[in-house]
Length: 196
Image (cartoon, rainbow, N blue to C red; front, side, top):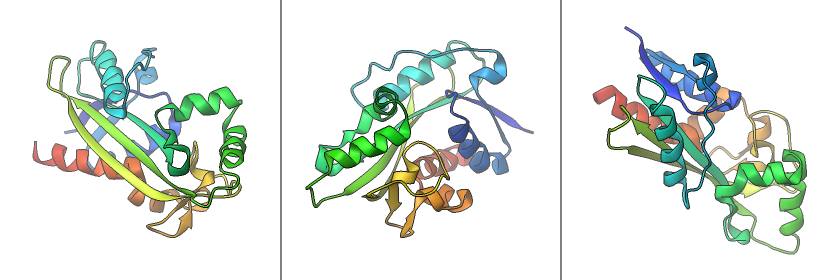
């Protein structure tokens, strides 16, 4: 029997990643628009956990099934982990991701350390009054001097992943889905769902 979960996102790339990893376990992953919902709470948290919970709680008030929400970001170490929590908003403020890539590289001029990591925190709520459960993942690497390729989404074309020694912008999705920050967090969620 298929098990239903609603994912708090309007990001098609993110939705695809969750579906590809969880579908083989018999999970059907919906997003709010699949259910005719438009839910976009203000992310006022001070860390990834708080923001993921804000999104999960808002969605759990509107649907009668378990929900998952994540918050993630790109942390550039030489920039004090900026843009981090503000990764999506930073790209929007810059006018889009290509402009954000250029701005990050401008801020890194003269700095030797280009190390960075993608981080992700998933919040799972079985029902709206359930205790939130968190699953986290991290993908280490470094910032490229210019974007490469167009695979993935968000900051992927600006990132070289250390574990596979590859630029994410030219990495096939099936490989990225084994090592990405979100994939690692989803795998932890997957293990929990398998035994619960």
